[in-house]
Length: 152
Image (cartoon, rainbow, N blue to C red):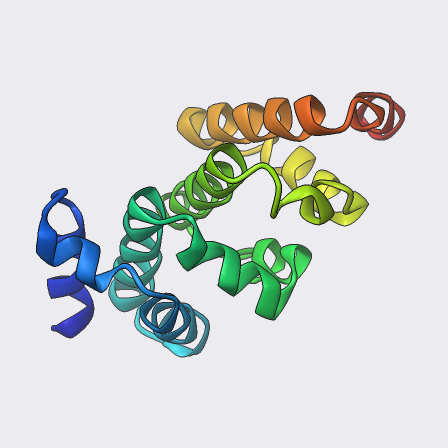
């Protein structure tokens, strides 16, 4: 219930949603996402995290700093398309809105390989979001394009 409430509040841009956009909330949502066995809770947690990242990128950047970028994308290996879409949105939003803090993330080759695998998803939306994330990664580091061509 709490995760669904956070998801509903974070869907709107208001003073209350800005109060929820903290690194502690982001860490709690990530914990629920990674440790819950109920799919509805997992989807609501990652959706809430994605929406809070839109309000404050530091929410997701703290999760990335704690877990590492590849661990984040590995955590969704067997997840459904909705989870993948929310996760790709959160990563792209964090990269797009805070260039200085994310430079070490874009240098990660494993992250690029994981995003390339999302291009083979049956979901059109997931493939599109993965493509947009690749554009952001290439924009930050042009050597990523060469790396993508070598591994695709």
